[in-house]
Length: 181
Image (cartoon, rainbow, N blue to C red; front, side):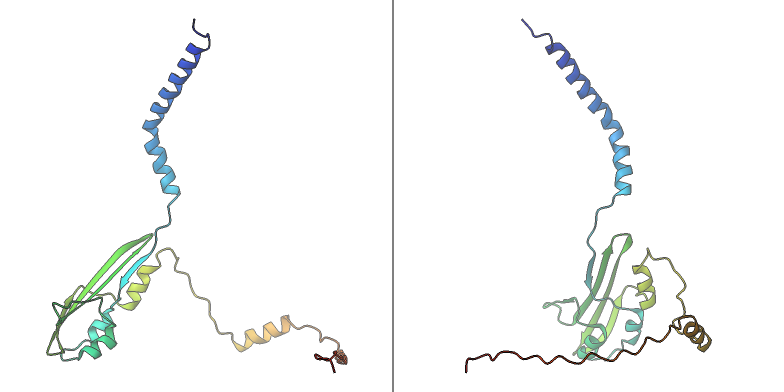
C-alpha cells in the first residue's frame, strides 16, 4: 500500500526540476547582467622596461654597451647564444585599459651599438595618458596664492590673541635611589 503523500511529493519534485530547467534559458542573460555589474579584481601585470620615444631618439650608433644600459636600463633579454643582441620588451595589462606591448631590439658589433629596430614608441606623456583612463581630466587649481588672497585670508581668519598664561613651574621630583646605599 502506498502512502498518500508519495504521489504529491513526486509531482512537486517534478515541478521543481521543470522550473529549474526552464530557468536555464534565462540564466545566460541574467548572468551577463550580473557579470556586467560585478567585475572581479584582475591583477596588474607589468613586465620589462618602458622605453620612450625620447630614449630611442638619444640612441646613436657607436655607443658602448654601458652607455646604452645607462640610457635604457638593463635589457629584458640578453641571450647567451646571441651575445650581440639585446631585446627590450615591455608589456602591461591593467583592468579597464587596453593591453600594451612594445619591443625594441639592439644589435652590437664589437661592443658598440650598430643598429636598432622595433615598434614605434610613445612619448612619456603619451604613455602616462594611457595609464589612467578612469580619471577625468579636471583643471588643476592654482597652487600659488597672490598677495591680495593672503591678506584676505589673514583678515578673515584673524583670531583674538590668547591670554598670556605663565608656564607652570616645574615640579621638583625626587626619585628613590636605584641601588640601596
